[in-house]
Image (tube, rainbow, N blue to C red; front, side):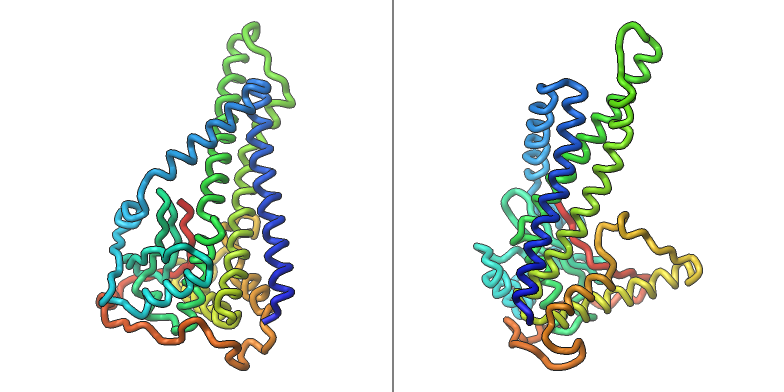
Length: 319
């Protein structure tokens, strides 16, 4: 694995994260300033902190149970729990996140952090469909989100975007009031154009930040496992499942390519290209360095297979 290139890529990802957060905070503070002057900047900062504090009060086990998840216990999925524990130690986490089985028909994995606790939700189909090294790579990706504080980063971004949108809505209400009572309120054209553009720019910045953190989690997962090929294969499988599902639901002709700028996740092809750039071996050659844990977890505890309609995605839930 090319560790020098990996380090440079992670530094670039960190710089991009800082850039997107700067755009989000700049749009919010400028909106607050246009509304209330210097006091508006202070107010927006305080409201962001309050929003984050309130959004972080719901315990993770409540969030997972709202999605129908149940915690996996020792004696039920020991191999999988041991894998999460070892990856967590390698990632520098003080304790392993709780692992939950989510009753979703699709191949799914997501990370949750709230109330000072972290958890990872996985679907039974994910465990069935992926090989041992691919499952390890996906879990490493989710653990990287937790270790890097991505849940907190995205919660901050969502809070700033929400406040920016609320300020813009208020500004347009004031504009309507000024049109009805022209002598009572004066609103500049420049300010209104700013309030028109700010919500859209904030939304695009949040999406860009999400894609950047996905790339960063991919890089961190590669560093954790030492196997870029495993994560690349897992992403390829997930993409194939998703494409097959969409074709069954809407037909090949109806499939539309979502522009990159409107995605929460980067395109799978680009993710795989970047991941394999850190491999010192061809994608189909060699096994690379030894993984943290090669034992395939027993799947005897999984519920029966649901042969109904299914969809597939690799998602990260930012709470």
